[in-house]
Image (cartoon, rainbow, N blue to C red):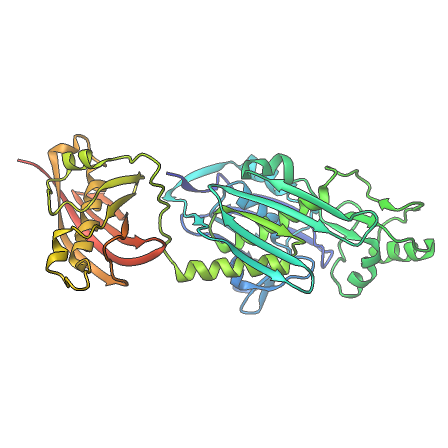
Length: 461
């Protein structure tokens, strides 16, 4: 089972802000299990902390801006992409300004420092958001759309399109997150020269220059106008004789702008607070529509706080019914686990197929057969017992007995034809033979029952 990760040590970076042009100091710290990404403004009294979550996004012009209690931090997406892509789940970020430093306009330096700091595995399991069905957001006015589809890993396809003779259509693909450091992270943000005047008037690129952005000259302008822009940006004037890219450094990739848009998508989607198993297809993406998809996913997470485990009946079980019968004393008609499909350090997933021939249907509402709730609880208890037994040597020599059951909730009927997915996870480690755990029963994607258990493991006489 994959575990959550954090930094091996703290590290700091310094650079100017894109919006303010001021010198900014930012430090990334390791954080405990289930901490997530949090940003602390150490330049303000009380050092307020902002959760880096999609619902806290308040602005998306030239970068993602998050806010809590009127405290804001902007242009966070390049750092968020680096944390997400390197597998960091928990990090506290301290910054002494209302924005992150632009650095070279990419995720390169963030990834480099994360790799130097090292990545350590934590105790908590990595909690994925598993895409179960197609989700889509569209902007009819701009033609932008983001679609997310089921996949067994995280991958992205990006297509960008501009009315420009220099940059028209480009696409970029990341088939696996492991490609990010070498193939994506170095891609810089970009801007058209024709947009610079408007952006300066709106105070959006005070810290921009030819070293931290790809600058695209795609409409001829008088040299005097170019000199004025250079003065306003406080950068050396550059004599431009032809359309094209006018950076000091050449493109890192032929499709560097499209690859940078891929960074932006990752950075914004990272704000859902969980790693994703799914494929994103992004057409003409931007921070606004990226955040719309992130908010949609956050809403789905809140509605389905615990996601149903993936169940593929084509994959052989880790425990079949014969092995289960070696460990549990239950027999017909009271053995309520058919197989185990997943076992982790502190969780287990079992399956129970509900057939109309179950004996309890003969007397439990025979005209409208419904599985008794107490048997749902028993099915969870048996699955939890297998998890506890799996943690000891010679499990055949032990039995589990449940001492307490709390917080039982029934949310939906279970009827013939349903397949129960039973997920049990440890709340606390086993101590002195006592274990507490939380159980969930799903039918498809729907949670139908949940409960908390306390169990004791006892050696058989």
